[in-house]
Image (cartoon, rainbow, N blue to C red; front, side, top):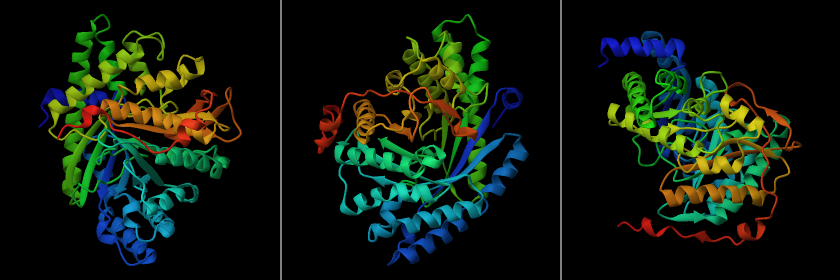
Amino acid sequence: MFNKTEVLETIDMIEREHLDIRTITMGISLLPCIRENAEKTAQCVYDTVCTKAKNIVRVAEQLSGEYGIPIVNKRVSVTPVSLICAAFPQDAEKIGFALDKAAKALGIDFLGGYSALVHKGTADYEKIFLDGIPAVLAQTDRLCSSVNVASSKSGINMDAVAQMGRIVKRTAELTKKSDGLGCAKLVVFANAVEDNPFMAGAFHGTGESGTVINVGVSGPGVVKHALENVADANLNDCAEVIKRTAFKITRAGQLIAKEAAKRLDAEFGIVDLSLAPTPVMGDSVAHILEELGLEVVGTHGTTAALAMLNDAVKKGGVMASSHVGGLSGAFIPVSEDIGMIRAAEKGALQIDKLEAMTAVCSVGLDMIAIPGDTPAETISAIIADEAAIGMINNKTTAVRVIPVPGKGVGDTVEFGGLLGHAPILPVHTASSVKFVRRGGRIPAPIHSNKN
């Protein structure tokens, strides 16, 4: 339970420091929906999602009013759809359209799980499913897709990596009227987790219960404000301040998560304590790093500062709850963080530095706009590099890049809303074609052999 001091501190965080519940995400198993054909399966999928999640928006609004904590997004994640349509992969789009229709009927902002897990190999039905992703994302509004191409236990499926480079490129082309915005709904993972409440990468893992509530809490502004109060402290003391702040934020998230699960007749899954930024001033992970003493994020010392921040956030979270999960830590999406945007505009933040930062952050290369003429093989090579970081370090990494059709370095792309805007960042122009086209699988590292 909260004591009086914690209540007052939390109120101050909400009113002045942008603390919010970033998302309440209901995970729903679709395995019972499998029928003999796509039409019947799609109808059952629609009915199941609409029935299970029919009250998610109403309950979120009730909790927000009762506790005074803003709940920004209401979402649903489902079993990876490639599993649901394995018998009819050529008709997978019907499941995707049913899910998008359900999301609109429920009034939620995104629905995740148009996904596939191909980290060790790609079955024939999965190849068909993957090839259909661009068209489905281009024809839906709220559906999100993710593909897991690597893991620390199995290595990197380079055939899938090569295919995903082409898929990202095709998705951008099919959504060129919106500057390739379809790619903002597509994430390529290594070591994907089953309880992630954040989009676009959320899916409901097969090891999860039938219906689960996962909550994502975010408070970059809260952490920055706490550090402002210890401006002359050494880094050890800064880490302690971040840890204590993360503890308080997690307590608030768990309170909401447990109550939401109770009212929605679902199990409480996890609290994801991810510092997820927005383009709003005062809600930036980059500004936290700069508060620690960096003139601009991207300069030397950035990776060390981010490592300390991420570790302290996780330590504070696990002290506050026994069910901290998802991707807890710090996100570094370029277009969604005002500090990252400004650093990129100054030229202080480039894709190579971002890649280094992903070795210690919560996810990976996120919401990065790149030239529209970037070859598919270069995108695949970027994915492979990021997957290697995840595989070797036994952590989740991901790539969400947007090759903006018709634009190049020096241009800016405007996505709007929480997706923000960003300058087009350059990528290396030397070819990776032969490497990517070798295919096969990069073996798992020796330290994966732990049985």
